[in-house]
Amino acid sequence: MKILVLNAGSSSQKSCLYSIDDRLPNEPPEPMWEAAIDWAHHPGFAEIKVKTATEELTEEIEVKSRLEIMAHLLSMLWQGKTAVLNHPTDIDVVGHRVVQGGQEYSQPVQIDQTVKATIDRLSTLAPNHNPANLEGIEAIEQFLGTEIPQIAVFDTAFHRQIPDAAAIYPVPYAWVDQGIRRYGFHGISHQYCAERAAHLLQRNLEDLRLIVCHLGNGCSLSAIAQGHSIDTTMGFTPLDGLMMGTRSGSVDPGILIHLMRQEGYSVDLLDRELNRESGLKGISGVSADLRQVMKAIADNNSQAQLALDIYIHRLRAYIGAMLASLGGVDALIFTAGVGENSAIVRSLACESFGFLGLKLDAHKNENRPVDQDIATTDSTVRVLVIHTQEDWAIAQECYRLRAKHVSLHEKQS
Ligand code: AMP
Image 1 (tube, rainbow, N blue to C red):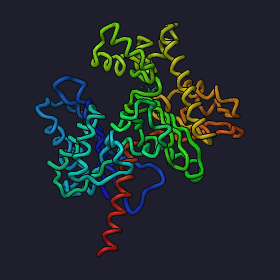
Image 2 (image 1 turned 30 degrees about the vertical axis):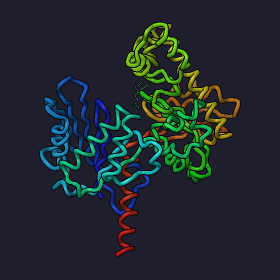
Image 3 (image 1 turned 90 degrees about the vertical axis):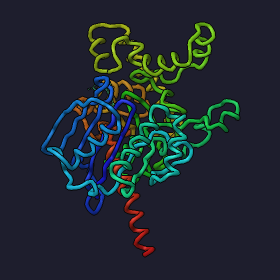
Image 4 (image 1 turned 135 degrees about the horizontal axis):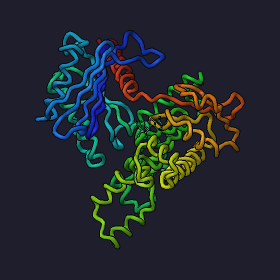
């Protein structure tokens, strides 16, 4: 089965083509074809990078319309040096990462007119993401035709079963009726890491209590019991919870009221400062990238040190919150850019949980672990570093849904 995965954001879009034979492999395979469009790199131009097993190329194209660029990118699957297919109809299914699935979707779903209308309606909850996701779906319809099945895999779906006590904010109940609640995000990554952890530990996912720390530009934790997310730190929007690269995470909402009332802040200014000028970047004054913050700390920059201290304080506090929601933990999992690469963040985060009997193996922690247990053998809690693979997770969901569809079809005929 040839599965094309589209992961579209407002300023970038990643695409991968996977080929799966008669069953899902145990280890994540390399895609046959990988591409990325960067819309923001050079205003008015799109930077396109494509990689196959034998070719790698980068192009910059003037943007007349985004659809035109996407058509060009898709044609590179079957034309020119990067071609890996004979014809567009060789693609069996297209999977899309869709950020906001609201209260409607707790599972991946095959896309039809109703699903498209729902994704569109939910754009009010994710104005920077759902419209780009819909654009990707429509581009496929336009250029590959409506015959190729398309599947939406939602970033919120994994958190859909979080109990109301953890999902509902203590606000006037009328707000709850308006859909104001914790949706949670990074669900595709949290679910992938939970399944991968069970595989690496050779345990049943249903028997494990897990805390997944997705620490990238955006950061969120999830508490997972019996294979389900039961709590998470991102909320109604991806602004809630942990301190992030440029996002503040949770702050006292009274601060916003104060700034609007006393300083005349507009909604747009608050939005920009909390989403793009806060977090590691806001406090350090150096960068949103932890690598730059660490360099500044080495140069005795006290604001950079404060940024790291707040980041760790909040990470530990929220791990504590997830621990309480689960009533214990079998494994703590680190993933995404910071989680996978920063030994110091992992070590500082774990330090506070020594009282549980959690012990890191310092050598394993510092030795670039990938999909590995880095706790000592006598640690009471396993600590895993897992390379998150959202695109592969989407491809697996597409494979499972298509396989179910085909077997249902065979039974009926
Ligand atoms: P992601 O959103 O998962 O792509 O993560 C991106 C972030 O990961 C970057 O902004 C960096 O802060 C962080 N990162 C990547 N590599 C490293 C590294 N070697 N050490 C510390 N942080 C890193």
